[in-house]
Image (cartoon, rainbow, N blue to C red; front, side, top):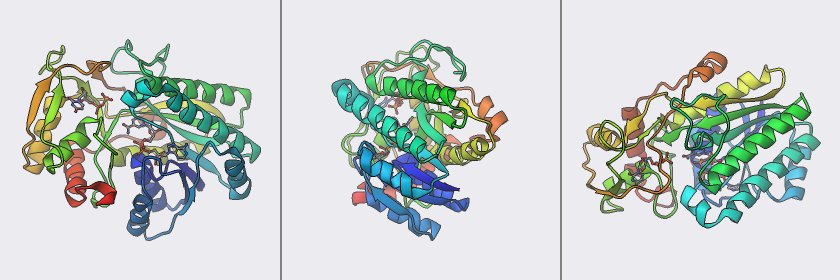
Length: 339
Ligand code: NAD
Ligand code: UDP
C-alpha cells in the first residue's frame, strides 16, 4: 500500500513509519516539524534501510495539500498530525481548535478530491471524558472531554463518523490510544518532548538522566490501592503495530467508521511505574508528593477485546519492556534528537 503519514516525524508517527516500512509498505511523511525534527526520519531510514519521502508542509496549507494528493496516488492515510499538550490547550484553545480541526478538514477535502478514502485517525482515551466506567468500551456514549485538546478529538471523531455516513466508500479507523510509553528497542528513536515534559514517563527519564532534579507525584490521596492514579500504559511499538493491523482490516472492510481501543486493559499506578523503572534500569528516581494536578482522573484503562477480535491485534509488551526501552533511548540520547 502507498501510505501518507501526517505527523510522521513525531513520537508515535516515527515508530509507525518504521513498522509500515518493515511490512513492505511504501510510506511518505507530511510534517511541519512543529513538534519534531527531521532527524527522527533520518534514523527511521537508517533502521529500515529504506528512504522515506518527506513533505515539509503545514496540513492547513490547502492548496499545497490538495496538490500533494492530486499527484500522490495514495491508497491510505494515517493522520497523526496535531497539537497534543492538554495544559497548553487550556491556555491556547484557539491554537488547538484551529490546528487540529482545520488540518483534519483540509485533509479530508484533499482526500475526497483525489479519491483516497481510507484513513486511520489518532484519537485518544480522553474522549471517554470524566464519567465513563472503566474499563472503557468503544460504544460508550456520550463522548466528552474536560479540556480543549480532548474536545478536538471528540469533534474530529464526529466529523469522521458523519463523513463516513455520507458516503459509504470511506473506510475510517478511529484508534483510541491509552498512554504510549517507551521507544524502539534500538534506542535510536523515541519521545523527545520540547520543554518540561507533561507526561509521567518522559519526566521520570529526564530525572534519571540528570536533566531534572526530582519528580513531583501529583497526589497520593486517590481512591486506588496506593493512592496514586491508574493509567493504561502501552508500548509505542504495540501502538505502531496496531496501525498496521487497522490498515489491513480497513482495506477489507465494506465502508464506514469504526473505533478501537488500543491499550492493554490493565492500569498501573504512578508509584508502580516509578518502582518498575527503578527495577528495570537500576537507576533511582527521587520524587516528592505534591498536590493533585487539576483535571486528572483516578483511573483510565480500556477494554481492548474489540481490537483483538476484529483487528487480530493485542499489546504484547510489559511495563518492564516499556521502561527498559525508554531508558535505552533516553540514556543514549540525553538531549533527545538535538543531542
Ligand atoms: P507528536 O507531537 O510527537 O507528533 C505530532 C506531529 O504532528 C509532530 O511531528 C508535529 O510536528 C506534527 N504537526 C502538528 N501540527 C501539524 C500541522 N498543522 N501540519 C503538519 N504537521 C503537524 O505527538 P505524538 O505523541 O506522536 O501523537 C500523535 C497523535 O496521537 C496526535 O494526534 C496525538 O493527539 C495523538 N495521541 C497522542 C497520545 C500521547 O500520549 N502521545 C495519546 C493519545 C493520542
Ligand atoms: N504524573 C505525575 N507527575 C508528573 C506527570 C504525571 O504524578 O510529573 C501522573 C499524573 O497525575 C497521572 C499519571 O502520572 O496520574 C499519568 O500522567 P500523564 O500526564 O503521563 O498521562 P494522562 O494523565 O494524560 O493520562
